[in-house]
Image (cartoon, rainbow, N blue to C red; front, side):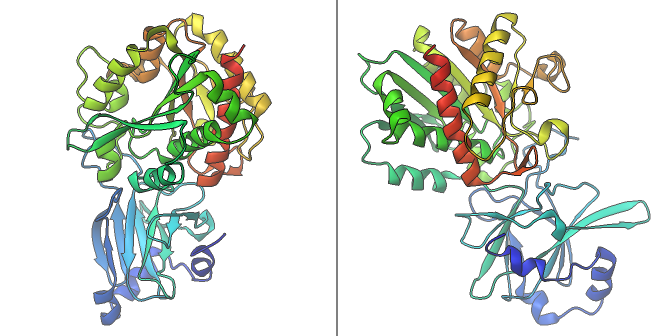
Amino acid sequence: MLGLAPLLLHVAVAPFGVAQERARQPNVAARKAFTIDADYPGGNVRVVRREGDTFVVAPDLRDTQPGVWWFYYNFRLRGPAGQPATIVFEDRNPIGVRGPAVSVDGGRTWTWLGYEAVTESKTGSKTSWSFPAVVPLGATEARFAFAPPYQQSHLREWLNVHQDNPALKVEELCRSRKDRAVELLRAGCLDESRVKGVVLLTSRHHACESIATYAMEGILTAVLAEDELGRRWRKQWQIAALPFTDKDGVEDGDQGKNRSPHDHNRDYNDKPLYPEVAAWMKRSQSLGPKVVFSLDMHCPYIRGQWNDRVYIVGGAKPEFMEREREFVTSLARVRQGPIPFHASECYLPHGVAWNKTANYAAGRSNGAWSRDAFPDARFCGTIEIAYASALGEEVTADSARRFGRDLASAILEHIER
């Protein structure tokens, strides 16, 4: 582990009961000095209570349907450098399988703290989960999040690197409900007279699913690269990519899943609620038969069988099932990066586990819409990219980008058949 993690792992993690005992005689200077907030793009936390240098916090579910719990948090600790505060979650555990993600450079880069730094405590029938949070020496803050966020600032940094590339064009798809610009990126062959087909990419229908956008960045980087793969893409294929489908949710720090009254991935109906979805449907459908592939990129739940891997979500249309399995086979064959993908373990057919018709009762998803809108496309569907651990391998921003390159290879192989 890098960055803040070694410092934290040398701090003894006290059970919450011990932290409560210490709180009865708090260090007054530390109590005044420590602060927690989420007042920055992507920030999300609710401070339930404070007891000395212990903060009991919870995800802020302000955007979510009543009675639904989700796990996204992203907060900033400010206080005396080198002195640990204790962060506690009660009742529900929103800490992922590699612990919280940690940033000591203002949210630009992130590492995993490690789940070994997390302490589970039981008091009667109640359970809590805690970890030490430290502002490193020489720093003024540290950030902690469920997973490495991907914000407007990350996209801007990537665009700055590629701003002079003639194979990339940035357009405004629409304005969000809060009047933010919603970016549409076109990459690859931009000469419309030579374009043989267009590949549609979307991410962040659920605002918290940031790892998917790192993978999208990896796809776009591969398309622009000065190598054989990039040149093949730019010869006759174009990508139209929507990095932030829920732009306001991403920047406001909403978690986005099961947003009230329904989320962006249940909005592909006759009268969409969200301007991003309406504009994307209109723009994509204007391309007609040029659309040869559509991939909606997501992240799954915290942990469990279908949450510890990358996998393709099968659709309900029988005519697409063979195409789905062919793409799964292609991706498994071309994969070179560190994130595993096996044909036998990474395809969830419709009707299995959570992937059932009842799960889509709130409205039509992007995958279902694309299969209706582009019946002749080589593939229309969804991929889930694990937040932290994929079949035992660590998922990071960098490995997600490298998996994006694998996706670029597999998509090209699939559409060139």
